[in-house]
Length: 309
Image (cartoon, rainbow, N blue to C red; front, side, top):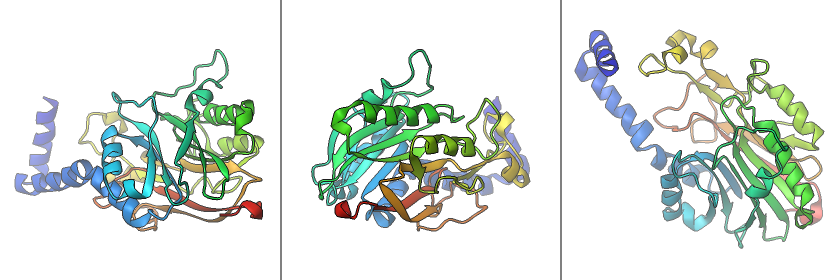
């Protein structure tokens, strides 16, 4: 019945030969071609990256990436405990030229075992991936990728656990952390229900970490801008086109963290076009850009020049 109501709504507002053509175009680009479009952006725009961290990645995406040109350029690392049911996994790409040996060991379980005892942290299988890696200059890294829960309440505990895990294992002494994440932080968080972005920044600063945005990010520097129409079942989340800015998900959600003493930031940018540019106040995904999060990229320079790469 619900589907019939939606079809009736569309037929009332637009001739079928018009709206069905639009639907076909949207389904083709946003669903059927989502993986090929994403792979094309990574290959054509970001294949010069040394490290890429991705979140909410399907097993099909991983297989297609490994079989594509990206598989010849990057070591593509998925969690050992892959989530094949929910099919949303954090993944890491290491450039083969920069990291010829690929991943060292996966330390995800060490991170998960570092959560506070008796505290339930809302993480799901596949949300965290943490590995060691050594680059061609013999600099040792811990590289982590993390997808936060919708409200961002797992983000601080996971960052705590990564730092604790690295401190607890003598084999990780001297490793440099690079941590890419969808932190799911909010500009105007609901107290006690969502993770405020500035509160999160204060927290990672206490751990000796900083971000590609600096110690304190601009809370209105958004990396998501999307909203739901009424043509979907969660009507409580729907809004008019004129309301998408105030009622949509427009927030500063994405971060790259690292220790303050290890790197300085040469350049950071965000991208919602796939062309290293970001159009402010534009809702996405679009027909050309398949993600509801912008790409976040940064160029880091080692502070210790003797290990510079």
